[in-house]
Length: 450
Image (cartoon, rainbow, N blue to C red; front, side, top):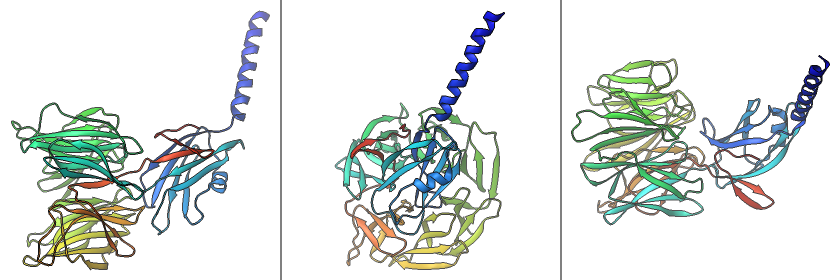
């Protein structure tokens, strides 16, 4: 009997020693990943190996002195959110240090973080096109050549790449997916379908999932597929009266129907559907979860802008006879912008800013410009700027053959062109976080260990 107790006692003693060693082991930063900005300018999520002391993390966190920020979270998961009203004008240096809840010190680490998204754009080059990226420090950079013409360009919501619809023939379109590294070099480029399609519509969410509506020549309806961020495909039994849009926060899709719009859950969530009747379209999502801007169409050809918030009926913010081209939203719908076009002989393009109560804060005529048909307006909170695709008109009324990307500062009202003709464009969320070690930078992947 004594012989049995000896190994058991040794095992218990070894377990106790291991437990003591693990408790005294320093915490580690397991991951630092960019996140959706929400109500701030930009954000990163931090994951540690141990529950951390929040007061210690906050006290030891180092950012530029003039950069307001918030540290939110608990346990081993925290969110660093940049706030304030000053646009981010350059990459930031970030130091993370502190102690865990047992008082063990985290090894300090320094990071260089570029919070601003890059601009992805297509540019015609003869009979084909090029895919380009743009940032303030580099200007336009060619990523790859594309065969045929680009009909649609969609940067993926997690910043991992882009989806495109290209065509060498109007009835033979191809859906492609491109993977990009954090420093914006092409990893690979591949078609999602073996056979060409005649129609394709794309949507993405913050996780990088990709929804594809597509139909082939012999089909009378569109099939719906959901590709997750890891490339796994799932067929969705959905029918829609127009383009389906993924909700940015994931798990839901907005589905247009003949007499309204539906909000449907996506697998593997239990099936659930909420329906909003009326001749409405989804115009844009707000960064804060659960809020969206809708366009309502009236029998007398007027259009109105409505704000949709959780648990509330849509609230009208604006109504008019002008053509409503696109909208964009900041934070929890604190600021909403709509792009209007009026007049036939002498068209007038206007940018209107509303608050969440529907009060007109600013109304600016964009004289000498015309919009690129079908293009959307996008808000970048880190630059506090709207992205618009515009063509400049000459005094004689002639306009550019191709549009240029323009950044409109929502604070100063300055409209600045990014020189160079393009066809399609959108913001690609930044994944550019580099760990600094004794002056030598080390590129961090989406999940980094220190």
